[in-house]
Length: 223
Ligand code: C5P
Image (cartoon, rainbow, N blue to C red; front, side, top):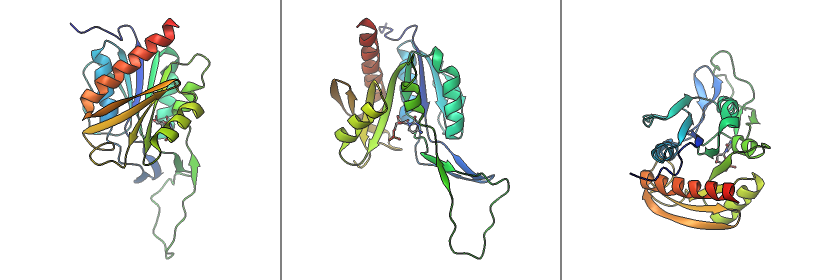
């Protein structure tokens, strides 16, 4: 049998997009499929972790044995994470959380008017992973960075700024990887090192990344 590297470890992930309502029938969102987060949840479960998956709206099947919490908006995702975070040993922020949400959500469907322009005011959403990493008793916190240029520079900046223990960066400009793709390649950074996880099926890549996270998590608890 496989070594249960994460036996007895409570691990929470966020996955998928968020939807930010404009009115009862419209929202702002993005193309995140949730595939990477769900693959990571399955890989963590296979290593023996007690896995909670906080997911935005996706069309994926919950991995066997994983506890799933469904949310729509960034505010709901934030609340769901904060409610359970004190019990978690590892937190992985895989979700493509909307940076901004409409300032007001119209109670009724917004009507078309005579005007050719419409302005929608937005307000910043809470940065879930940064808030988790700022907790006094914080879990081992892993973030993702989707960049189109200067991957290493922006990822390392995000690692520092958000006080993360690890960040997995992918070049979304590269063909056949990243958003909505079945394949992905990652460069993973931690405060004093980095490694490349080459292009692979998201399930293989998830196993490699979870194993790396488990090793670094155990290292920080041995130190
Ligand atoms: O700053 P940026 O949005 O590029 O950071 C991406 C990382 O931060 C991802 O791990 C994402 O899940 C997380 N994030 C978050 N809450 C937000 C925005 C991003 O947890 N509001």
